[in-house]
Length: 182
Image 1 (cartoon, one colour):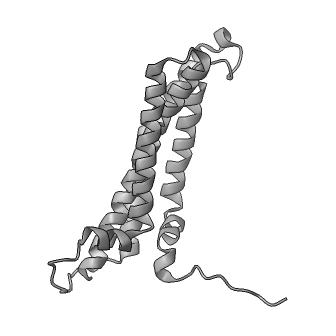
Image 2 (cartoon, helix red, strand yellow; image 1 turned 30 degrees about the horizontal axis):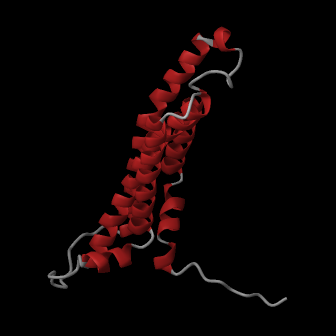
């Protein structure tokens, strides 16, 4: 394995963990925005929303750079400079490493969100007579967010091969625009 390939694997793994951080920042953004819609337009809430949007946009830029523009990032950061082009002896394929990282990231999302989802559902069912419906429950948006995070984590664990193929599609050259006559 060449040093450039090792850097590519490490950066793509870091990109998967950045995806985890994006998912962790979304509940704060939704909580602040729903509070803003229900209450007055306080400058503190607007600051929270602006800060959340700014941090999520930086994370999205990093996610795109780390996962889909890895070669560009290696060139810009000059990660290959000063490293001799010797072969590193690792007998594991890069897609296997990405598959393991995807499973671990999905597992972390599941472990983080499943208890919060169950807690939210339990609290809702305890207070079901007070709010007359899920829509009026003040924490219904957080329950939905945690449900989506659980589904994403489950998808990452169960469909890791599909995710790795999506990440690696450019390197494999599978994305080609073909014009069929007809």
